[in-house]
Length: 64
Image (cartoon, helix red, strand yellow):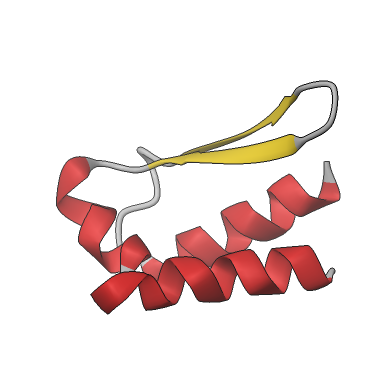
């Protein structure tokens, strides 16, 4: 659950309006997926140009 909190913190720091953000952990047999739901008008901020911000968030979370 700590990874979910870290992911939520990183995403909330990027966006000005944090009320409509949802971060959940989905577990399967072999994988853990952290699902981030943001409003469609904020999606480009979280993804970044060419996916650079999303990849950075993924790298930070995987490293921890």
